Amino acid sequence: MYQEKFMRRALELSASALTLPGTEPFGAVIVKDGQIVGEGLNHSLAHFDPTSHGETEAIRDACRKLQTVDLRGCELYTSAEPCALCVAAMVISGIGQLYYAASLDQCGPIFDKLPLAERFPIDVAHLRAECGGPVQGRALPAEQKLDDEAVAILKAWAAPRLA
Image (cartoon, rainbow, N blue to C red; front, side, top):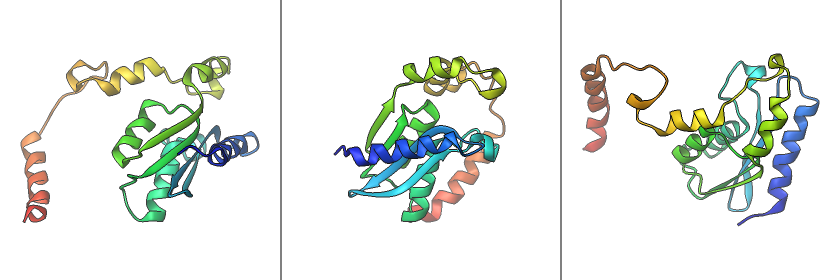
């Protein structure tokens, strides 16, 4: 259930990027049973990590604190609508509800005006298309190799867990 205090905390984290070098203004919090269990701020530039978005950092923080990769029953509050990478992480981890402030349509024009040296442009429509389609239909070239060996490893890993 939406609580404004959690959105305000996500916005506080976002605003910290105004003075914290190597960060971008995307903050997020994970809430479980009315308590913040994870927080994150975009540190992509500081960590040289293109996956260090506010949402993914909050998911990582919550998983470490709760000692699980299962965040079912949790809500995510974020300062901006998540990109496809973050949505994928939310779905994989089981986040049950998303609340966001600025939409991607509101963010785009602001970041599009920045000099190229100050931004890493994300083509949201392209990202969504690449993430949503089968590997054979993506623009990113891909070839499958050594699948028999990979499948054997997967089966060997799964076998003792099936007993």
